[in-house]
Each structure stands twice: as C-alpha cells, then as structure tokens.
Image (cartoon, rainbow, N blue to C red; front, side, top):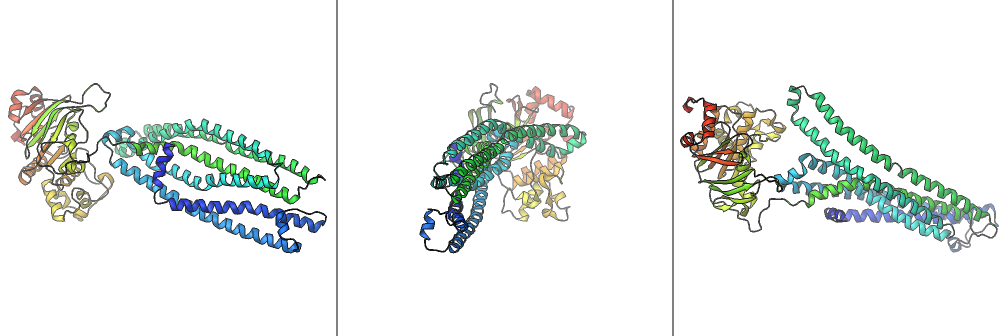
Length: 600
C-alpha cells in the first residue's frame, strides 16, 4: 500500500483523463450488461411467433402489451444496436483516455526519478549502481506504465462487469446463480497461489537486468580495449551467462503464470456445462416458468462473469510482473540524498581560501579504516597547492571534499572561512571547479561543451579560456572552429585535447578555486608548463589545487602536500621537501634521476 500511495502522487495532471477513462468503462459495461436483458424478451417474442402457446412474463414485454410481435422485435433490435454503438464508442474513448493517462503517469515517474537522481550524492549513486538506475528508469517504468493502463481498463472493467453481470444473472434466475459462488472462489484462490509462486522469481529477474545493463555498459565503454586484447569471446560468454539467467528465470516465472489461462478456461467450460444441463432441465420442466430467452440471457451473463474474471486475471498477471518494478522505482523516489543544503544555507563565498581541520573520512560507515586520516591543511586565497602521492593514496578523495562531493566523518573542511556544510551546494560548486583526469565531453559542439562553464559566454570568452588552457592551437585548425561537432563521450578528440577543453570549460565558470585532479596527465610537459604559466599570469587571484603524478606539474606551487595511505606525511615547498621528505626525495630521484628541473 505504501508503494501504491507513493506512485499515486505522480498521477498529477492526468487524473482528469483517468476519471474520464473510468466513466467510459462504466458506460461501456452498463451497455454490455443491458443488451442480454433486452435479448431475453426478443427471443421469447420470436418463440411466441413460432408457438403462440409459449408466453413470457418479462416486464419489458408487459410494457409493450398490445404491440405487434414484429414491432416488438424491431424495437428491441434497434435498442440493442444503439447500446452496441454506445458501448463501442465508450470502449474507444476509454482506451484513448487510459493510454493518455498511463503515458502521462510514465512521464511523471520518469521525470521525478531523473530529477531525484540529479540530487543524489556519489554515495547514493554507488548504493544503487549506474546500471541499476538505468534499468529502473527504462524497463521498470515501462512495466509500471503498462500495468497502470491495464488497471484503468481491464482491472476496473473486470470487477464492475463481474458485479453487474452477477446481479443481472441473479435477477434472471436466482436458482442457478449459486454456481458462481463456487466458481469465483476457485479462480480467486488459484490466481493468488500463482502470484505467490511467481513473485520471488520475478524479483531475481529484475535484479539480473541490472547485471545485464552493467555488462553492456562496460563492454561498449571499453570496446577499444576489448578489441585490442581480442576479448570478444570472453565478453560474449559473460553476456550470455547473464542473458541465459534472465531467460531461464523468466521462463520459469512464465510457466507458473501459464497455469492462469488453463484455470480460467476450465472454470468457464465447467460452468457452461453445468448451466447448460441445469438450465435446460428448467426450460423443459412443465412446472417451470423459465424460458429459452431467460436461459440465453443467463448464458450471456455467465460468459460476461467468467470473461471479467479472465480480464482480472490478465491484469493480475501484469500487476505481478510490475510489482517488483514498482518497488524498485519507489526505492529511488524515497531515497534521501546524503548531501543537501541547509534551509538557511550561505550563498556567497568570500574568497578562495580553504582549510582542513582534523578531517577523517570513510566511504563505508561500517568500515574500520579511514580513507582520509587526520588531514590538516591551510591554503590562502590566490595561492597554489600541489598534491602528490602514490596511486590509491586518496588524493582525489581529499580534493573532492573541497567541493563537498563527500561529507567528512569528523573534523571540518572550510572554504572562505566557512564550513562547506553551511553553504548552498550549488553556490559552493559554482565557485569550486573540478577538472578530472577522466573528464567527460557531451555530444554537441566544442562551443556547447565549453558553455557548460558559462552558458552566456561569448565566442571571444570561449577563445580566451582556450588560450589559457592551450586549446586554441587545435581548435583553430578545425575548419568549423568552435562549431566542430563533438561525438558522444568526446571520442573524436584525443585524450590531451579533451583534457584541455575540460580545463577551458572550468575556467569559464571563473571559480575562486580551481582543482586539477591529474587533468594534464595526457598532455606533454611543455604544454603542461604553458597551462600553469597561463594560470599564474591570467588568473593570479584564483586558488589553484593541482593533483599530479609528476613533479614537473607541481614544482612551482606555493605548497606541496605529500599524501601516503590517506595521510599527509609532509608539506612544504619543493626545496624544503627535497631536504625533509624521504617519499618526495624518492619520487624526485625516480622521475628526474637526480637531474635539474630546468631541463624541461
């Protein structure tokens, strides 16, 4: 019920179409139930023409007393035809409104989930995984949307038809209606049993869809690596295992659901046989007033009752399949972002200074080892900080704290003298620009990608940022210039060009703090040097944080922090670290062989 209540919030804007669909279904069912009621006096009138001794006490005929038999027949035929036309029109309108409401419901759900994901922190995204979120946004929402459309049509139509047809059947012949009190519980019990057996299997299937999407995502993103290592067969086998798991479990669940149709058909046929025998006996009995017309009407109501149960069972099957999808969707919608802005959050950042005060951090709250351990830093506004250390020493995690990509477990990170948790997230991240080693370009043009930094930037401002980032040289070589098309993921530019465009994009934000997280690793040392010179000359007031693996990228920084296993083991400038830090000395000897940096 909690799941249904949550999903019902996203019917907003389409409740009118939903109500219209229900009204159309009510009219359609009312017409269909009335037609057999009019069929009864018509058949009895035909029998009366063939044998005047056969009469009927039907109250419709009593209203037409004095009419000729042919006049009665044509009047009833006309009324039934009119009801059939109205029923057909109502069915068409019901389908139209139901499809519109379900499509709108799916749109609202999809938008709500996507917007919610935009507010997720890295921690929230890691909890679900990217592939799982994609599955929930696509396959799961499609399942729920189809189920909702079926509920609007079949599941609403089924119970309504069941009740009205049962009432009319009882009015026609109460002595035969007891049969339904046996059939309906049998079908209902069977349907519930089928649902309980199939549901756990569908849970496994939808979890496997996440693994399937993950396999496809990894393969397509790493297709160059797959081909270069000739691992197509391995990837095919991995995909095949997940695909076969989905096939086998889905087939198992469908085999369980397949019992639904035979159960319904058995009940229908058994009921028809029973009514045919018992009803026929009543018709031929001399002491019975049960007519052929009444038996025909009762048969029609019987089929309506049983077919309504069939419709309900079909809707029930769809609801079973979509139940897991609905639960997975609601999990995302109910997820609380682990990083949020306070109601009275500060929106103005004074300057680009930042500090770490006894900062400790763990990715897992249940973990025992800190990823960052007792970090203390103080970086004045407009200065530069270099960070160096072995791979896996938590350099990227440390600089991510400045933009509040994660929250500390203890201690605090301050920007402009204020704890980052007191800032409005959007305001903070507008003033703290990060350029990652593996950054992303989006499909579009060079200009559209650069304007992610400032959507109102002029072409001159774009080229100025390219100048500082040393991207002008290759941008101007393209005949299209800034209008050069960038393919999805930036696959038609080199790694170094991508990094320089990402740096230019960050510069267009005009941030107070610029973080380069090993983002010049794909450019040569000369270009790296020119980029750093451009920062110092053109943006002297901007605080710069440079995470690097090579000393050449950080040797001129005002401060250099040496990170080892999540701890700052040394801090100072280049000259002091060469004298005091064994780790820094080892890196220097390894990279430079004791040579002079001026060799660059």
